[in-house]
Length: 171
Image (cartoon, rainbow, N blue to C red; front, side, top):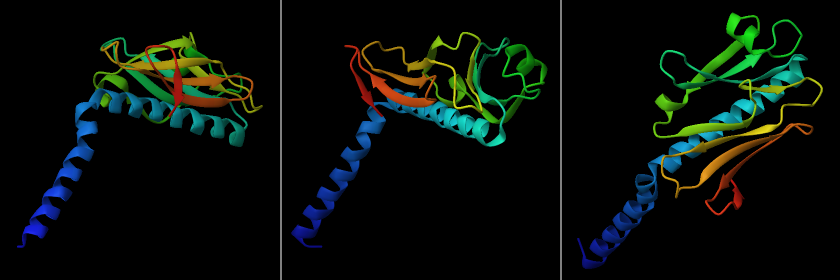
């Protein structure tokens, strides 16, 4: 092996090592972004389900009474009267697909809601929805938060990173 080949090999190895360091140094931020994007995808699929099936659909955020874990489920209206927490818990409004458990699937990530007091993010077949935000954050207050915001009249969803100074940047 020539001296040039050795230098090229060392250079490539250094680049590969340094490019992976960001992920290794910030696993909580990576998990936080993963949780937010999973909720964002569930919201978009629910909006599509509502508009294509002519039924209310949405995401139900449930706290497990035994473990205290936060579980996110996609749900669909089962009796044409909208989504209701009591009906979701009784099975009238059905949970569809596989939900995700925040603490298990994204360790170290916490959640808080602004709006969605019943835990239901609802989309109607008539292009309307709930209004509010879901914030994902970690125990380190210096790290930014990620907010998934839903604009009710337009049904638009926007995931944004919220920095400690209050500024936002779209993901």
